[in-house]
Image 1 (tube, protein in one colour):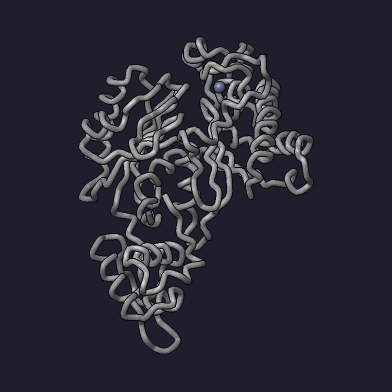
Image 2 (cartoon, rainbow, N blue to C red):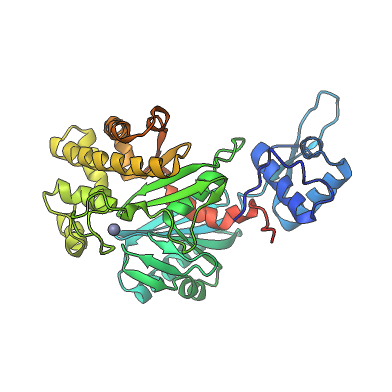
Length: 406
Ligand SMILES: [Zn+2]
């Protein structure tokens, strides 16, 4: 996916390919809506006739619509343009180690309906369950609106283009095609992506209207595992083998506990929700017993967080230990990438006020420069369902991304 810098498109005049101008215009509407044709012409430095022509095409495609007229100081009443998002639907699916979430959203990632169930380890049974739940959700909530795609996020590495899951240690999936079976079961196009990368795309493209698209940041997901979506110069970094950004499996200690990936002492075995839960329950982290422990204990990470917020010492201690290791892990990311900010998503962010001082202290002690030590660390609350917004972005964001120029 290639990003257009809508602030610097001097070269994209009427002589550049039509598609490029369509993308630029669409992005300008996304960023500045409601916006008039006159304002678009001014910002794009092209003639009004060209803007009228491009706008008509985008309206015909269903990407834009005309809304209210507004009064202008010179007495004319221009028709304002908006990106069409509300009546275009996406089904977002978030498959995790413990639970699977399904959300029906509009093209802006706004929730319409939400469903969840315990993740079924057997893949065929999981697809059948998804088929039943998605069909029911669409029947109950879609009405006359059209579902344009399914955005499915997984905790693992995904091959761009094919959507094949290369390795998802949390799910025990290696070289798995989940896109084909879900597409066949539901008859809707499916896009598959690594969850933290999807979160990063949502942050870029489903962010606040009128706000500039962030171009250099890391999105860290603290879930049953730990993942990172790295964005540099407005591009998601995937690497030559679609495995870049796997900070969750960078070891903090060479001889630490065994990780689901087979390695030892990974950041994930100290900081994932499973690790925090094990610590809270007084158990050593072990991939083989984690799932059984989850079901037998009946305690969830959300409960540990709320107990910590209520002042329970054991919960506070468990989370502080997570924060200490997370700080060490974020310091590795800062040393490697020097991002403008790191966004942290996940249930533990609900206790951010308790965690932030510890995380900051750990980063400060490990940073190589004063400025690096001050790298902003921004929480994104789990109540905003960032992973499901990520799923929605997989379907709606390509609308805003520029066509790739060979
Ligand atoms: Zn690992």
